[in-house]
Length: 447
Image (tube, rainbow, N blue to C red; front, side):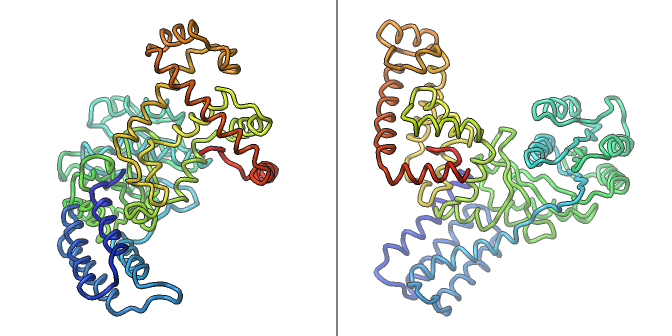
């Protein structure tokens, strides 16, 4: 989970509120100290942390609860609101044609993020083009080309050309019919005069609608001065923070850039090309506090689930057919949505409900089950009862696992089949599912 340590500390604060016999001044002051400590440990700027906790303390002691709201819920709501305010407003891109210039230092993940952003908008139905304008880093064009091939987005570049402005000028012509053009520019180990001159020249030619700075979460509070320097040079309009899933505290980068003129637009949440999400402060804080984020869960499902396969699977289940094929389809839909740890954080109270080692073990079991099922014949998948001892050995050898792993899969299947039979035997549930099927509102049964 993103910023797991901060989330755990903040959830402990909420538990302290829930377990308190009553809310008084002493409790509020204790909570404020706990929140201050959590924010500072997450590398949030000291002055900002003090300002935030002072606002929480003042509101908790003076604001009156809303009608029907008890004192505990009132304090929790204040903590949530003030944390959201610290991170600023949600920032989205315009709906008209966009030219996006990516800027930042070496090693912050600029090229990879350009590819992630291209994929993000392509999946939203936009026609996207990538321009390889990094003329200084060896193999930068090759890297972007490989990413473009992976996500099926065209890449324009001119290997050997030393003028980035020329490449950008020609790239804009190449993609003039595209909805979104993303310019991957050069970086440096530090801000230098030639880097500033180059991005100014590119900006003058491209007239970008968005100038996005890429920031590594490990930069911490140094992200603030860096964002300001790039902003002074080319008018940074937004920031993407990468590697928030790693060991970096992240609070410094998140809070620092939001006190500049460059709010966070996206965050990188993993190494895979799909691991990027629109930054919504409200949703982000809800997940940190263990309140869940159902909207992000639905969006993850929308991007990962094959609707035709989901409908076919559901139809088969409602007709009383639940073979290993249906179970495999359900597993694929689930694993395509992302790591279990990330998905659990989107359910209210889900983060921390199961220890990390158990989640990792479950993730590994799903991966192994998929390999085992890929070693089965179509007949075995459709009729699991035919899988006897000799077939178990053959399947285990083909999958590179032990026979006990194959039997574990079959036991899991039998348990799941009985559960499905019980669900389908409930007339009320069955009627509701049939209605949803008819309305087309059922997405990914079993998710």
